[in-house]
Image 1 (cartoon, helix red, strand yellow):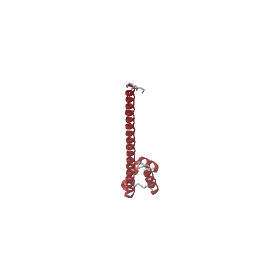
Image 2 (cartoon, rainbow, N blue to C red):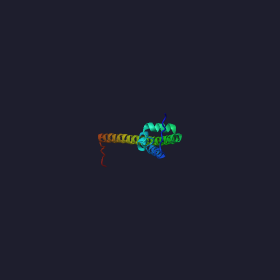
Image 3 (tube, helix red, strand yellow):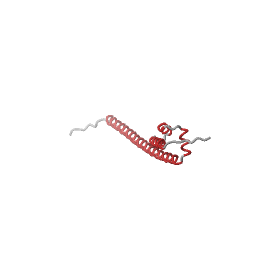
Image 4 (tube, rainbow, N blue to C red):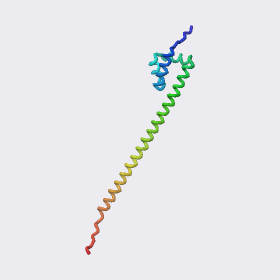
Length: 118
């Protein structure tokens, strides 16, 4: 004897809203709507409209997460680029400072030229 799972439209919508808000977190959506994981899997396999809405939300979440990943990746690259520029400037400044010190030392070692008064 097979029992039929009857889930109200309100529970389905609560699940879908929570699923979307949590970027497709199944545990969160089940907990928010009062569905067990078993009930979700039965519902998803027997209700093609519900399954289609879940699939749409999954694609939406993937697109959202990919855009976040790209943004994060770009931010990381910007940080790396800025860090490299700062490190290069620091090295350049250190080299310039070393060159200035060397030139100062060279000039200090030179004997002053005495000029005859005329």
